[in-house]
Length: 232
Image (cartoon, rainbow, N blue to C red; front, side, top):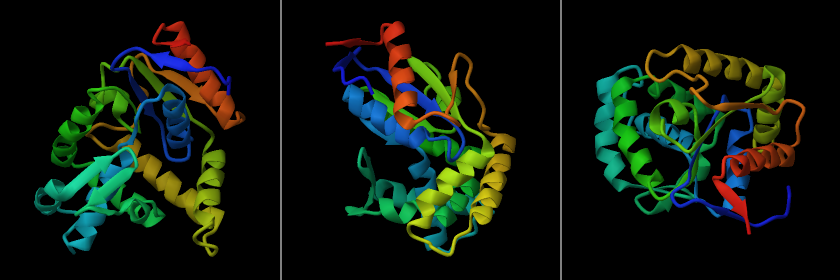
């Protein structure tokens, strides 16, 4: 990365979308650090929704049951830059597992669940942020100052995701991760409500052969050209 100090415009909102393993979470975190902006991972909200539904032994295939669970737990949830806290306990690490990712994908296709979580996301973004997810530029922040769509080959995304998860689960094979990734891609792209797609005006960055710092530098250069940030 450049090593420069950057000053963003007031209330700068950056939307960063892309499929699992595209690097959007890591890139969003580093861009946020460069600009001094909070980084908000919306995927955690859906993971929280799926996790709580399972914890309550409710039917994940029943939208009404999921909504009933969320009605009881959302008032006790606090979404911060560091992660998600429930009843004052940090549950972020519990939400990062591949199994919870699958639960998130199941509940995320329900229109009323997405509507319920939409206001939570928008209210937090008002003062400026880097927000990453799968429908930020299309639904959550359609008027964001800058929109990016990160992608990479499916093989490379599976390799990255496996490397991340293998630290905790030595039995996990890259084939398992690739199969789950493909299933999630199909669910996310095929759902009727807010499918995963590149937002209008979003700049696509293919990171298959790029280092993370190269992706970050490219995004910072684009933001500078748009006069959204300036070196100080």
